[in-house]
Structures are given as C-alpha cells and as structure tokens.
Length: 120
Length: 385
Image 1 (cartoon, rainbow over the protein chains, first blue to last red):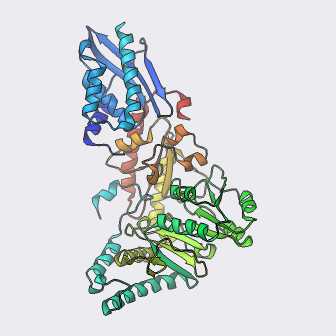
Image 2: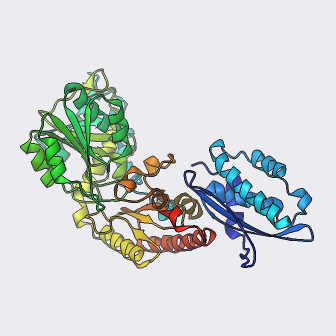
C-alpha cells in the first residue's frame, strides 16, 4: 500500500483528534463488510457552526485519513461552508486512489446524514 | 550494523544481508575472475568455476549431500515453478497434492497447470490430516508439495510421517523450506524429500538467488531453455551465488539449535505477547518456529496499525499478499473469519533483533493498538468475526 505524506498528515489528524461521544445524542452509523469499513458520526452544532465531530471508525489507513480530511475541512466551519462539493473537491485534490472511493462514499454519506439529522 | 534494523520486525518477508555475506560478495566482485562468464573457456572462466566449485563442495561436504544436486534459481518462486510445472509436464496424467497452508505462489502456479490437484485439509494448529493424505497418495504417480515452516503463522510441518507415506506410495515430495533456515533445524530435510526449495534473502543472503536441491535421479524438464550450468539455463549470477553459499555456510556453522541469542529473543517476544490480553497468538499450541508470530488484535485494522506503528516495520498477514485485499488463505484455513483475518499482523525477528528493541516495539504496538481500539469502539461484534 502506497501511503504518501499527504495521507499520513490526515491520518495523524484523525488519530490525535479528541472529541468525546455524547450520551444524549443520536448518531449515524454505516458499514460495508466487503469493503471492511464501519463508521459512526456524532456531530454537535451551535450557532450554525459545526463545533464538534465525534466519530468511531474501523477501516484501513485511507479511511482514517478521510476522516482527517473531514475534521480539517469542516470542524469550526459555519454550516453554509459544509457541503459535499467541498469534500469532493478536497478528496479530488489529494488524489485518493480510485480503489478507495467506495469507502470514501460510505464515510461521506454517514457524515452528511448525521449533519442533516443534527441540523433538524 | 544498520540503525534501521532496530525497527525491522519483518524477517519472514526478507532478512537483512549479513555483513559477512556482503564482505564475501565484495571480495569476489573485486576479484578479476568475477568479470568472467562462468560458461566461457578462458583462464578467468576457469578461475571463477574453480572458486564456485570449491565453495559448493564445502557446503555439500558439510551437509553430506553426495546424492543431491543443486540448481541455482532466482529464488523460491522460480523453484516452485520448476518443480510444479516440471512435474506436470513430465506426468500430465498424475496429480499434485498440497495443503491450504501454502505460499500464494503455489496456488497461482497450480491454477495455471492442467493437472489434477488435491488439497489436504488441516486443523486449527495447521496440522494436515494424514489419513486424508494417505488416501490421496494411494494412486500413483503423484507429487506432494508442502511448506516446512509457514511464512504467515510460523507453524512447522512435521514431515517424517509425510515422507514415509510418500515413499510407501512411490510419490515425490517437494518441501518449500524458504522459511526454514535460521528459524529451525533443517539438515534432516535432505533425507526426507526429493526436492527442497531455499531462498537466499530469507537467510541473510542476497535477493534474486535461491537453491533448489534435488535428488540426483529426479529429472524434471527445464523451465528456461539454453546452455545449462547447475541445472538451469542462463548466465550464472556468480556474485549472487557466492553470497548465497556464504549465507548458507553461516547457518551451517551456527545452526539455529545452538543459537542461544535468538532463542532468548524469541522467548522474550512470545512471553510478552502472551502476557497482553488484547492479543491473540494464532496457532499458539502448534509446533512453531517462534521467530514468526501471527497476532490477531480484534477491533484493530491491521493495515492501520501497520501505518501507525511507523517507523517500526511489521507485516500484515503475509508480505507477499499485502497488496491483495483478499483475506489470507492461510488464516482462513486455521479458522479465522474475514474480520479477524483483517485484524491480524505478523511480527518476525531474526539474527540482528535485540531484546531492548523488542521491548520498545511492543510498547509502541500496545499504544497504537489501544488508540485504534478507542477509535473503533462501539463496532458490533459480528463485524469483527
């Protein structure tokens, strides 16, 4: 597996990110056993800003790096700046290998579903 | 010694080149005779032939191999091809018997050859079913090809009984001993098998060279056509062979059975792994080469752990399979489901591993495992099986 410095950077962001799960909140969970990925997001929104991202994840280093991209891109951002297009562009710019796009879609869907639930 | 070896725990994939082997190769490469093509007929060629033959004779004398011949190949993959394809070409109506615990090359070669194949089942300790084997051997001719030391889980195939059955039913026995040298006793194998595969870079020699031992009367068609020396066509890579023979002589001079340093390091590593409740040592109760440990850590994705534990170098399952997304066939054969197989790493140590470096690696392994377990907390149990 080729894992370059860019992905290593985002991998490290995920591994050092601290955000406690809230017992009072719902979470969105997605998985695909054939792709060997399980992910769960729990988000906190305040004053139309994403103020915390809590997630749990079982997956390969690229999936961990993708969560790092989400944290890096969206934590502390106002809701209007948090779009699938922004995330797609970011992932495109760091050349995620195509074989990991299925896993990316699962993580993306879990994140935005949870975002929508948190907003409403 | 290279500082990086402190972080290297993947000896089953490839061993560092021993400095004494490097010295021997360097001396040879700086000598005038190294220029010569082994098959030429001038004085330099005679000189290089003399050098190689002397070195070879020493090995054959030490191992008492009068009844054997050596074929220098590019490594275990070529040797496996030579034996499996050669047997299939010579006996197209025969069968090849093997297990579900072999190196992936064996299955790739068998997929390509039109011969009957039989796969003998095994238990969770990677012991093959001898009754099933005997039934399979009853109809000759057949070739049985088995690994001696498993490259993924370190289990050792006890081959005395297997060899007896092969002789009883007039079957040929090929032993893939790529992992054997430096990890367990090997000299008895020459009495048991018709063909034995070794690969130099697995026992502190250079990459790109290996030895296929065969009994003198065991003739198989060549894979490569041309002028043959030592049973194989093509210009002999003399410097590689010098390195290969030196690394083999070092193993003979200081055999595994008498190497107390590696025994201590192996014992220490195994004790520490067994003391950690989060780790499951696979085939724990089997007869194993203790320098190869297959460890399952439920809830920890092995590839992520491999990345996180940098600069330490460990393997995910078998290194030869690590580019594949399919779970290891060997791990499945000993009863691990896909989930557990994906959470399995391999740690392998060797001649240059120090106990203090094992301790530092284990400290990081435990920290990284705990971090990844925290990240994956809440994952359903069924996902991990």
